Length: 445
Image 1 (cartoon, one colour):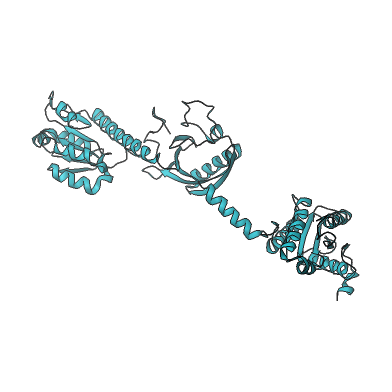
Image 2 (image 1 turned 45 degrees about the vertical axis):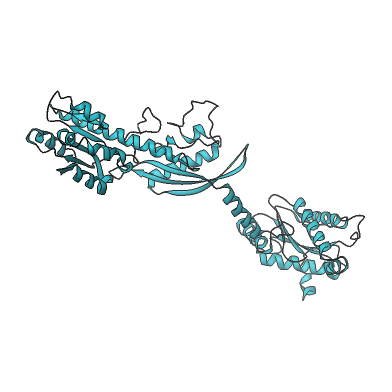
Protein backbone atom coordinates (compact mmCIF):
# COMPACT_ATOMS: atom_id res chain seq x y z
CA UNK A 1 0.00 0.00 0.00
CA UNK A 2 1.30 3.42 -0.89
CA UNK A 3 1.49 5.77 2.09
CA UNK A 4 0.65 9.40 1.42
CA UNK A 5 1.96 12.45 3.26
CA UNK A 6 -0.95 12.44 5.65
CA UNK A 7 -0.65 9.23 7.63
CA UNK A 8 -4.44 8.98 7.81
CA UNK A 9 -4.89 8.93 4.02
CA UNK A 10 -3.92 6.22 1.59
CA UNK A 11 -3.84 5.50 -2.10
CA UNK A 12 -7.00 4.10 -3.61
CA UNK A 13 -4.92 2.02 -5.97
CA UNK A 14 -4.05 -0.11 -2.96
CA UNK A 15 -6.55 0.53 -0.16
CA UNK A 16 -9.98 -0.96 0.12
CA UNK A 17 -11.92 1.26 2.45
CA UNK A 18 -11.75 4.56 0.56
CA UNK A 19 -12.16 3.93 -3.16
CA UNK A 20 -12.33 7.22 -5.09
CA UNK A 21 -11.15 5.65 -8.33
CA UNK A 22 -13.69 2.86 -8.39
CA UNK A 23 -15.93 2.93 -11.46
CA UNK A 24 -18.82 4.82 -9.96
CA UNK A 25 -20.96 7.09 -12.11
CA UNK A 26 -20.52 10.65 -13.28
CA UNK A 27 -23.58 12.91 -13.33
CA UNK A 28 -23.52 15.45 -16.18
CA UNK A 29 -25.79 18.46 -15.74
CA UNK A 30 -26.62 19.89 -19.20
CA UNK A 31 -23.31 18.76 -20.68
CA UNK A 32 -25.09 18.08 -23.96
CA UNK A 33 -24.46 21.13 -26.08
CA UNK A 34 -22.66 20.61 -29.41
CA UNK A 35 -19.50 22.27 -28.09
CA UNK A 36 -19.33 19.83 -25.15
CA UNK A 37 -20.11 16.60 -27.02
CA UNK A 38 -16.41 15.79 -27.38
CA UNK A 39 -15.94 16.10 -23.62
CA UNK A 40 -18.93 13.86 -22.92
CA UNK A 41 -17.63 11.18 -25.29
CA UNK A 42 -14.24 11.38 -23.62
CA UNK A 43 -15.75 10.90 -20.15
CA UNK A 44 -17.98 8.02 -21.25
CA UNK A 45 -14.89 6.02 -22.20
CA UNK A 46 -13.79 5.99 -18.56
CA UNK A 47 -16.97 6.27 -16.48
CA UNK A 48 -20.65 5.30 -16.67
CA UNK A 49 -22.55 8.52 -17.43
CA UNK A 50 -25.93 9.81 -16.24
CA UNK A 51 -27.26 12.86 -18.08
CA UNK A 52 -29.68 15.27 -16.42
CA UNK A 53 -31.17 18.48 -17.80
CA UNK A 54 -31.57 20.58 -14.65
CA UNK A 55 -30.06 21.32 -11.28
CA UNK A 56 -33.20 20.11 -9.53
CA UNK A 57 -33.07 16.80 -11.37
CA UNK A 58 -29.40 16.48 -10.40
CA UNK A 59 -30.20 16.95 -6.71
CA UNK A 60 -33.03 14.41 -6.86
CA UNK A 61 -30.73 11.88 -8.50
CA UNK A 62 -27.87 12.41 -6.06
CA UNK A 63 -30.30 12.19 -3.14
CA UNK A 64 -31.20 8.65 -4.20
CA UNK A 65 -27.84 7.42 -5.51
CA UNK A 66 -25.14 9.44 -3.72
CA UNK A 67 -23.28 6.26 -2.69
CA UNK A 68 -22.88 5.32 -6.34
CA UNK A 69 -21.77 8.68 -7.76
CA UNK A 70 -18.14 9.74 -8.15
CA UNK A 71 -18.63 13.34 -9.26
CA UNK A 72 -21.08 15.89 -10.66
CA UNK A 73 -20.06 17.94 -13.70
CA UNK A 74 -22.26 20.96 -14.36
CA UNK A 75 -22.65 23.49 -17.15
CA UNK A 76 -21.42 26.78 -15.71
CA UNK A 77 -23.84 28.82 -17.84
CA UNK A 78 -26.80 26.94 -16.35
CA UNK A 79 -25.65 27.34 -12.76
CA UNK A 80 -24.89 31.05 -13.21
CA UNK A 81 -28.56 31.62 -13.97
CA UNK A 82 -29.56 30.17 -10.56
CA UNK A 83 -26.71 31.87 -8.72
CA UNK A 84 -25.09 28.44 -8.27
CA UNK A 85 -28.01 26.93 -6.36
CA UNK A 86 -26.74 23.40 -7.08
CA UNK A 87 -23.38 24.08 -5.41
CA UNK A 88 -25.06 25.44 -2.29
CA UNK A 89 -27.22 22.33 -1.93
CA UNK A 90 -24.31 19.96 -2.48
CA UNK A 91 -22.03 21.75 -0.03
CA UNK A 92 -24.62 22.14 2.73
CA UNK A 93 -25.85 18.53 2.81
CA UNK A 94 -23.47 16.26 4.76
CA UNK A 95 -24.54 13.27 2.70
CA UNK A 96 -23.00 14.82 -0.40
CA UNK A 97 -19.76 16.02 1.16
CA UNK A 98 -17.78 13.26 -0.54
CA UNK A 99 -18.99 14.10 -4.06
CA UNK A 100 -16.93 16.72 -5.91
CA UNK A 101 -18.81 19.15 -8.13
CA UNK A 102 -16.93 20.34 -11.20
CA UNK A 103 -17.75 23.31 -13.38
CA UNK A 104 -17.57 22.94 -17.18
CA UNK A 105 -17.43 25.95 -19.49
CA UNK A 106 -17.87 25.79 -23.24
CA UNK A 107 -15.86 29.01 -23.57
CA UNK A 108 -12.08 29.27 -23.33
CA UNK A 109 -10.35 31.97 -21.34
CA UNK A 110 -13.49 32.83 -19.38
CA UNK A 111 -13.58 34.52 -16.00
CA UNK A 112 -16.34 32.12 -14.97
CA UNK A 113 -13.82 30.01 -13.07
CA UNK A 114 -13.68 32.72 -10.38
CA UNK A 115 -17.43 32.61 -9.82
CA UNK A 116 -17.44 28.85 -10.02
CA UNK A 117 -14.73 28.24 -7.43
CA UNK A 118 -16.12 30.98 -5.16
CA UNK A 119 -19.49 29.21 -5.21
CA UNK A 120 -17.91 26.03 -3.88
CA UNK A 121 -16.98 24.06 -6.98
CA UNK A 122 -14.02 21.74 -6.54
CA UNK A 123 -12.70 21.97 -10.10
CA UNK A 124 -13.21 23.91 -13.31
CA UNK A 125 -12.60 22.91 -16.95
CA UNK A 126 -12.68 24.90 -20.16
CA UNK A 127 -11.55 24.18 -23.74
CA UNK A 128 -9.32 22.68 -24.97
CA UNK A 129 -10.27 19.41 -23.29
CA UNK A 130 -7.22 17.14 -23.27
CA UNK A 131 -8.30 13.69 -22.16
CA UNK A 132 -5.20 12.81 -20.14
CA UNK A 133 -5.31 16.07 -18.20
CA UNK A 134 -9.09 16.03 -17.74
CA UNK A 135 -9.13 12.49 -16.35
CA UNK A 136 -6.19 13.20 -14.06
CA UNK A 137 -7.87 16.28 -12.60
CA UNK A 138 -11.23 14.53 -12.19
CA UNK A 139 -9.58 11.61 -10.40
CA UNK A 140 -7.63 14.01 -8.19
CA UNK A 141 -10.84 15.83 -7.30
CA UNK A 142 -12.52 12.53 -6.45
CA UNK A 143 -9.54 11.39 -4.40
CA UNK A 144 -9.35 14.72 -2.60
CA UNK A 145 -13.02 14.64 -1.68
CA UNK A 146 -12.82 11.04 -0.52
CA UNK A 147 -9.76 11.89 1.54
CA UNK A 148 -11.54 14.85 3.10
CA UNK A 149 -14.53 12.64 3.86
CA UNK A 150 -12.28 10.03 5.40
CA UNK A 151 -10.58 12.62 7.59
CA UNK A 152 -13.97 13.89 8.72
CA UNK A 153 -15.05 10.37 9.63
CA UNK A 154 -11.76 9.81 11.45
CA UNK A 155 -12.37 12.86 13.63
CA UNK A 156 -15.72 11.39 14.63
CA UNK A 157 -14.20 7.97 15.28
CA UNK A 158 -11.59 9.49 17.59
CA UNK A 159 -14.42 10.39 19.96
CA UNK A 160 -15.18 6.70 20.47
CA UNK A 161 -13.38 4.78 23.22
CA UNK A 162 -12.61 1.96 20.79
CA UNK A 163 -9.47 2.03 18.68
CA UNK A 164 -9.98 1.53 14.96
CA UNK A 165 -6.96 0.87 12.79
CA UNK A 166 -6.14 0.00 9.21
CA UNK A 167 -3.28 -2.12 7.91
CA UNK A 168 -2.06 -2.66 4.38
CA UNK A 169 -1.55 -6.02 2.67
CA UNK A 170 1.88 -6.35 4.28
CA UNK A 171 0.51 -5.98 7.80
CA UNK A 172 1.86 -2.44 8.21
CA UNK A 173 -0.25 0.19 9.92
CA UNK A 174 -1.78 2.93 7.79
CA UNK A 175 -3.57 4.76 10.58
CA UNK A 176 -5.13 4.30 14.01
CA UNK A 177 -7.72 6.47 15.74
CA UNK A 178 -5.84 6.14 19.04
CA UNK A 179 -2.30 5.28 20.12
CA UNK A 180 -2.82 2.88 23.01
CA UNK A 181 -0.33 2.93 25.86
CA UNK A 182 1.07 -0.54 25.12
CA UNK A 183 3.03 0.86 22.17
CA UNK A 184 6.76 1.45 22.27
CA UNK A 185 6.91 5.10 21.18
CA UNK A 186 10.24 5.99 22.79
CA UNK A 187 8.65 9.16 24.18
CA UNK A 188 8.75 10.91 20.80
CA UNK A 189 5.86 13.42 20.44
CA UNK A 190 6.17 13.16 16.64
CA UNK A 191 6.13 9.38 16.66
CA UNK A 192 3.79 7.84 14.09
CA UNK A 193 2.34 4.38 13.73
CA UNK A 194 2.30 4.70 9.95
CA UNK A 195 4.30 2.10 8.06
CA UNK A 196 5.21 0.07 11.15
CA UNK A 197 4.50 -3.55 12.05
CA UNK A 198 3.31 -4.94 15.39
CA UNK A 199 6.69 -6.38 16.29
CA UNK A 200 8.26 -2.93 15.85
CA UNK A 201 5.87 -0.99 18.04
CA UNK A 202 4.44 -3.31 20.69
CA UNK A 203 6.18 -3.87 23.98
CA UNK A 204 4.55 -7.28 24.37
CA UNK A 205 6.45 -9.22 21.70
CA UNK A 206 4.52 -12.44 22.28
CA UNK A 207 1.18 -10.81 21.51
CA UNK A 208 2.81 -8.90 18.65
CA UNK A 209 3.87 -12.15 16.97
CA UNK A 210 0.39 -13.60 17.51
CA UNK A 211 -1.13 -10.52 15.89
CA UNK A 212 1.12 -10.82 12.85
CA UNK A 213 0.33 -14.52 12.44
CA UNK A 214 -3.37 -13.73 12.73
CA UNK A 215 -3.01 -11.04 10.05
CA UNK A 216 -1.23 -13.42 7.67
CA UNK A 217 -3.99 -15.99 8.05
CA UNK A 218 -6.69 -13.38 7.47
CA UNK A 219 -4.96 -12.03 4.36
CA UNK A 220 -4.54 -15.58 3.07
CA UNK A 221 -8.07 -16.82 3.70
CA UNK A 222 -10.17 -13.67 3.74
CA UNK A 223 -11.86 -14.84 6.94
CA UNK A 224 -12.31 -12.34 9.75
CA UNK A 225 -11.41 -13.19 13.32
CA UNK A 226 -12.26 -12.11 16.87
CA UNK A 227 -10.07 -12.81 19.90
CA UNK A 228 -9.09 -11.43 23.31
CA UNK A 229 -5.51 -10.79 24.44
CA UNK A 230 -4.11 -10.23 27.91
CA UNK A 231 -1.73 -7.31 28.45
CA UNK A 232 0.29 -6.91 31.64
CA UNK A 233 2.09 -3.66 32.37
CA UNK A 234 2.44 -0.74 34.73
CA UNK A 235 -1.34 -0.27 34.72
CA UNK A 236 -1.92 -3.87 35.80
CA UNK A 237 -3.69 -6.55 33.80
CA UNK A 238 -5.84 -5.48 30.86
CA UNK A 239 -7.86 -7.48 28.37
CA UNK A 240 -8.32 -6.23 24.81
CA UNK A 241 -10.77 -7.63 22.29
CA UNK A 242 -9.65 -7.51 18.65
CA UNK A 243 -12.17 -7.73 15.82
CA UNK A 244 -10.44 -8.04 12.44
CA UNK A 245 -11.97 -8.05 8.99
CA UNK A 246 -10.47 -8.10 5.48
CA UNK A 247 -10.71 -5.04 3.23
CA UNK A 248 -11.41 -5.56 -0.46
CA UNK A 249 -10.84 -3.47 -3.56
CA UNK A 250 -13.42 -2.99 -6.29
CA UNK A 251 -12.23 -6.21 -7.93
CA UNK A 252 -12.77 -8.28 -4.80
CA UNK A 253 -9.10 -8.70 -3.96
CA UNK A 254 -7.97 -8.57 -0.32
CA UNK A 255 -5.72 -5.58 0.11
CA UNK A 256 -5.70 -4.76 3.79
CA UNK A 257 -7.15 -5.27 7.25
CA UNK A 258 -9.49 -3.08 9.24
CA UNK A 259 -9.79 -3.82 12.93
CA UNK A 260 -11.46 -2.67 16.11
CA UNK A 261 -9.84 -2.85 19.56
CA UNK A 262 -12.12 -2.72 22.59
CA UNK A 263 -11.04 -2.60 26.22
CA UNK A 264 -12.96 -5.52 27.72
CA UNK A 265 -11.03 -5.69 31.00
CA UNK A 266 -14.11 -5.28 33.17
CA UNK A 267 -16.18 -7.78 31.20
CA UNK A 268 -13.36 -10.31 30.89
CA UNK A 269 -12.46 -10.02 34.57
CA UNK A 270 -16.09 -10.66 35.49
CA UNK A 271 -16.21 -13.59 33.08
CA UNK A 272 -13.04 -15.09 34.56
CA UNK A 273 -14.36 -14.55 38.07
CA UNK A 274 -17.62 -16.29 37.23
CA UNK A 275 -15.69 -19.10 35.56
CA UNK A 276 -13.47 -19.39 38.62
CA UNK A 277 -16.48 -19.49 40.92
CA UNK A 278 -18.04 -22.24 38.85
CA UNK A 279 -14.89 -24.32 39.33
CA UNK A 280 -13.93 -23.53 42.92
CA UNK A 281 -15.26 -24.12 46.39
CA UNK A 282 -16.48 -20.82 47.82
CA UNK A 283 -15.33 -21.57 51.38
CA UNK A 284 -11.76 -22.78 50.81
CA UNK A 285 -10.95 -21.42 47.35
CA UNK A 286 -9.86 -24.90 46.24
CA UNK A 287 -11.33 -26.64 43.21
CA UNK A 288 -14.81 -28.05 43.68
CA UNK A 289 -15.65 -31.75 43.34
CA UNK A 290 -16.53 -31.71 39.65
CA UNK A 291 -13.49 -29.69 38.59
CA UNK A 292 -11.14 -31.68 40.84
CA UNK A 293 -12.22 -35.01 39.42
CA UNK A 294 -12.22 -33.69 35.84
CA UNK A 295 -8.74 -32.21 36.19
CA UNK A 296 -7.29 -35.40 37.66
CA UNK A 297 -8.93 -37.51 34.95
CA UNK A 298 -7.41 -35.30 32.23
CA UNK A 299 -3.94 -35.54 33.77
CA UNK A 300 -4.11 -39.33 33.99
CA UNK A 301 -5.43 -39.64 30.45
CA UNK A 302 -2.83 -37.31 28.91
CA UNK A 303 0.19 -38.37 30.97
CA UNK A 304 0.07 -42.15 31.04
CA UNK A 305 3.85 -42.42 31.49
CA UNK A 306 3.94 -40.10 34.53
CA UNK A 307 3.68 -41.53 38.04
CA UNK A 308 1.26 -39.96 40.49
CA UNK A 309 -0.47 -40.37 43.82
CA UNK A 310 -4.06 -39.70 44.87
CA UNK A 311 -4.86 -38.63 48.44
CA UNK A 312 -8.34 -38.89 49.94
CA UNK A 313 -8.48 -36.70 53.07
CA UNK A 314 -11.20 -36.55 55.73
CA UNK A 315 -11.41 -34.18 58.71
CA UNK A 316 -11.86 -36.46 61.70
CA UNK A 317 -15.09 -36.21 63.74
CA UNK A 318 -16.13 -33.07 61.91
CA UNK A 319 -19.76 -33.46 62.99
CA UNK A 320 -18.66 -33.36 66.62
CA UNK A 321 -16.74 -30.13 65.94
CA UNK A 322 -19.87 -28.55 64.47
CA UNK A 323 -22.06 -29.81 67.30
CA UNK A 324 -19.66 -28.73 70.06
CA UNK A 325 -18.28 -25.46 68.72
CA UNK A 326 -20.85 -24.36 66.12
CA UNK A 327 -20.89 -24.18 62.34
CA UNK A 328 -18.78 -21.03 62.25
CA UNK A 329 -15.99 -22.93 63.99
CA UNK A 330 -16.49 -25.79 61.55
CA UNK A 331 -16.04 -23.38 58.66
CA UNK A 332 -12.85 -22.09 60.27
CA UNK A 333 -11.50 -25.64 60.42
CA UNK A 334 -12.32 -26.36 56.77
CA UNK A 335 -10.79 -23.06 55.67
CA UNK A 336 -7.63 -23.76 57.67
CA UNK A 337 -7.28 -27.27 56.22
CA UNK A 338 -7.83 -25.85 52.73
CA UNK A 339 -5.09 -23.30 53.38
CA UNK A 340 -2.66 -26.04 54.47
CA UNK A 341 -3.34 -27.99 51.28
CA UNK A 342 -3.12 -24.90 49.08
CA UNK A 343 0.27 -23.91 50.49
CA UNK A 344 1.63 -27.46 50.50
CA UNK A 345 0.63 -28.47 46.97
CA UNK A 346 1.06 -25.89 44.23
CA UNK A 347 2.03 -25.86 40.60
CA UNK A 348 1.22 -29.09 38.78
CA UNK A 349 -0.63 -30.74 41.67
CA UNK A 350 -4.44 -30.71 41.92
CA UNK A 351 -6.13 -29.83 45.20
CA UNK A 352 -9.87 -29.73 45.84
CA UNK A 353 -12.69 -29.99 48.34
CA UNK A 354 -15.01 -32.74 47.20
CA UNK A 355 -17.55 -32.82 50.04
CA UNK A 356 -18.46 -31.36 53.42
CA UNK A 357 -15.33 -32.50 55.26
CA UNK A 358 -13.61 -34.31 52.38
CA UNK A 359 -10.61 -33.16 50.38
CA UNK A 360 -8.68 -34.68 47.49
CA UNK A 361 -5.13 -34.11 46.25
CA UNK A 362 -3.43 -35.51 43.16
CA UNK A 363 0.37 -35.37 43.27
CA UNK A 364 2.11 -35.46 39.91
CA UNK A 365 5.48 -36.99 39.09
CA UNK A 366 6.00 -38.38 42.57
CA UNK A 367 7.26 -41.58 44.19
CA UNK A 368 5.10 -43.52 46.69
CA UNK A 369 7.44 -42.93 49.64
CA UNK A 370 7.42 -39.17 48.95
CA UNK A 371 3.61 -39.20 48.93
CA UNK A 372 3.65 -40.86 52.35
CA UNK A 373 6.03 -38.21 53.71
CA UNK A 374 3.75 -35.45 52.43
CA UNK A 375 0.73 -37.11 54.05
CA UNK A 376 2.62 -37.18 57.34
CA UNK A 377 3.52 -33.50 56.94
CA UNK A 378 -0.03 -32.25 56.39
CA UNK A 379 -1.33 -34.47 59.21
CA UNK A 380 1.16 -32.88 61.57
CA UNK A 381 0.24 -29.36 60.42
CA UNK A 382 -3.46 -30.10 61.00
CA UNK A 383 -2.82 -31.27 64.57
CA UNK A 384 -1.11 -27.98 65.41
CA UNK A 385 -3.88 -25.73 64.13
CA UNK A 386 -5.68 -23.48 66.63
CA UNK A 387 -3.05 -23.73 69.36
CA UNK A 388 -4.19 -22.02 72.54
CA UNK A 389 -7.83 -22.09 71.38
CA UNK A 390 -10.73 -24.34 72.43
CA UNK A 391 -10.40 -26.13 69.08
CA UNK A 392 -6.86 -27.24 69.91
CA UNK A 393 -6.45 -31.05 69.88
CA UNK A 394 -9.84 -31.43 68.21
CA UNK A 395 -8.58 -31.26 64.61
CA UNK A 396 -6.92 -34.18 62.84
CA UNK A 397 -6.93 -35.83 59.43
CA UNK A 398 -7.41 -39.34 58.08
CA UNK A 399 -5.69 -39.91 54.73
CA UNK A 400 -5.89 -42.73 52.19
CA UNK A 401 -3.36 -42.93 49.36
CA UNK A 402 -3.30 -44.77 46.03
CA UNK A 403 -0.57 -44.71 43.39
CA UNK A 404 -0.75 -44.42 39.60
CA UNK A 405 -0.37 -46.68 37.71
CA UNK A 406 0.16 -49.48 40.25
CA UNK A 407 -3.25 -49.17 41.90
CA UNK A 408 -5.23 -48.14 38.85
CA UNK A 409 -4.87 -46.64 35.39
CA UNK A 410 -8.12 -44.69 35.55
CA UNK A 411 -9.32 -42.08 38.00
CA UNK A 412 -12.21 -44.29 39.14
CA UNK A 413 -9.79 -47.11 40.03
CA UNK A 414 -7.45 -44.79 41.95
CA UNK A 415 -10.45 -43.27 43.75
CA UNK A 416 -11.69 -46.67 44.93
CA UNK A 417 -8.19 -47.69 46.04
CA UNK A 418 -7.58 -44.46 47.99
CA UNK A 419 -11.07 -44.71 49.50
CA UNK A 420 -10.32 -48.22 50.77
CA UNK A 421 -7.06 -47.00 52.30
CA UNK A 422 -8.96 -44.13 53.94
CA UNK A 423 -11.62 -46.50 55.28
CA UNK A 424 -8.90 -48.59 56.90
CA UNK A 425 -7.48 -45.53 58.69
CA UNK A 426 -10.91 -44.48 59.97
CA UNK A 427 -11.63 -47.99 61.20
CA UNK A 428 -8.32 -48.10 63.08
CA UNK A 429 -8.38 -44.96 65.16
CA UNK A 430 -8.23 -42.10 62.63
CA UNK A 431 -5.55 -39.35 62.72
CA UNK A 432 -3.24 -41.29 60.43
CA UNK A 433 -2.50 -42.14 56.80
CA UNK A 434 -2.28 -45.36 54.86
CA UNK A 435 -1.20 -46.55 51.42
CA UNK A 436 -3.55 -48.84 49.53
CA UNK A 437 -2.66 -52.53 49.25
CA UNK A 438 -4.65 -55.37 47.63
CA UNK A 439 -5.33 -56.89 51.05
CA UNK A 440 -7.65 -53.96 51.84
CA UNK A 441 -10.23 -55.24 49.35
CA UNK A 442 -11.35 -57.97 51.71
CA UNK A 443 -11.61 -55.53 54.62
CA UNK A 444 -13.69 -53.09 52.61
CA UNK A 445 -16.44 -55.54 51.70
